[in-house]
Amino acid sequence: MNYTQAIDQVRDVVVKMRYLESIDNIIYCDKWHVCPKDGFSYEADVNAYLAEIRHDQLVNDHVAQLVAYFETVDDSQYQNDIERGMVSYLIAKYKEAVQIPAQLQARLNKACSEGQLEWERCVHANDYESFKPVLKEAFDVQREIAQAIDPTKPVYQVLVNRFDKDFTLEEIDAIFEKLKEAIRDILAKTEESRAKIDTSVLKNDADKQTMMELVREVQDLLGFDWNKGVMYEVHHPVCTCNGPRDSRPSTNYYELFRSLLAAAHETGHGLYNYNGSDEVAAAGLWGGIDGAMHESQSKFYENMVGRTKEFWTAFYPKLQEKIPKYRDVKLDDLLCALNKPIPGTNRLNADELTVDLHIILRYELERDYFEGKISVDTMDQAWNAKYKEYLGVEPKTYSEGVLQDVHWASGYIGYFQGYTLGEIYAAQMRHKMLEDCPDAYEKLAQGDISVINQWLKEHVHQYGQTYSVRQTLIKATGEDVNIQYYIDYLRDKFLR
Image 1 (cartoon, rainbow, N blue to C red):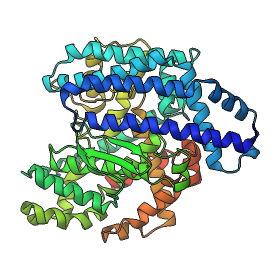
Image 2: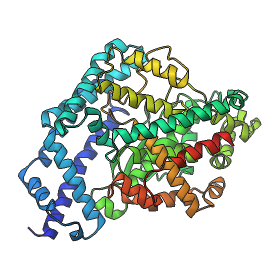
Image 3: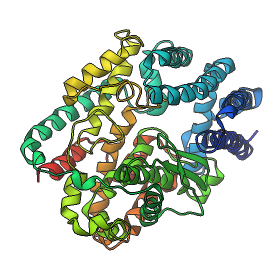
Image 4: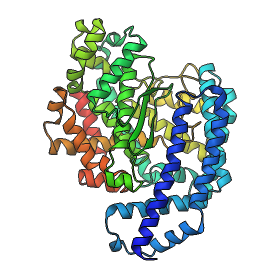
């Protein structure tokens, strides 16, 4: 077997792996959009069977030979970065598949499918007691997976690295401590000024149809390509990537401005999902890098576009046309209300300044669980205590507290840090983008987001999963992760 033959075989395996992933994601999207409740258990069985097929596709002599071959290939022998990326992708997936028994992966898939359904029931019923066995199974299966992958490392380190491969827990802890200090300082300094901000302007009686139309207007302004995606409705907004040119963001329609910002967030994921180059798509490296890099794009569009004066200068007339109340509300008054720091109990409704405290405490709870400091029986108490300490508030119900996120029930344990790391990456990218394109936001105010979209596509999106997170960040900004850009961004926004 020579290099050309081997790389062609790698491409074939990777592309077919992504086919199976696409099937899995299509089922996931179906379950939370149109699947009848009585169909859930069957689709869970299908997911479990797909997990077995994916395992068999990776764990066999053919793939083992390819991995062995490329582990001896010198880096200089690769013809291009995409071929190098394909091989790295395959080797990482192969090693994990070898480490995780097929039965354990099937158990995880089943736990996630059943767990999400039970989570939805429990959150509506405010029933944490019934959710405890679900939560315990979710954490138990993740512990077994981590121990199967690398029994020499702390469980939580392994779980975090499944989503954010480039960081140690010590690095994340240090970043989060610095950020917590900065946020608390900003909050203290804005206490008097934010007390004067009237948020009643955000209250409205927009009906669902009006909200749906405005969400569509937001996505149009953000440049979402409707030939490459659809929008759907779920209780907890997500974005599924069903193929290189098939991305499906979602939102809910409970409250207008939260609906609009959630749509912007998920549209950011959507743009990253489908904007890989043709070469990246053909190599099976489409969809973007999971974890913090993906969250950097969603957070960029939610906050560094969707909460800006420039965005609302372009969008506000559309909202005023559909909701007459806002014809009498000044744009600056709306923006002050929309961006007001309000320490609260709900992550999805959190403002841009305090949201990272929500994220950090979840990361710390996960870490404490796997270090044996808390259990499912004390998780709700620990949750409430951290909210009191970090945000000065306490949830009044389980649904307002420990039950509010779908992540743990759906297998995303070790994921939360990615939101805040994503904010940090986004601020770093914004800084570099403004150096390269100082008129980007002036264009946005005129309803033209093409400068922003083109910069992100050129420097981030087009590469898909070709590079690692830190390689992508350095390629886009010229330097490794630097938290100072984010802290400066927050200080400039809230203390100016």
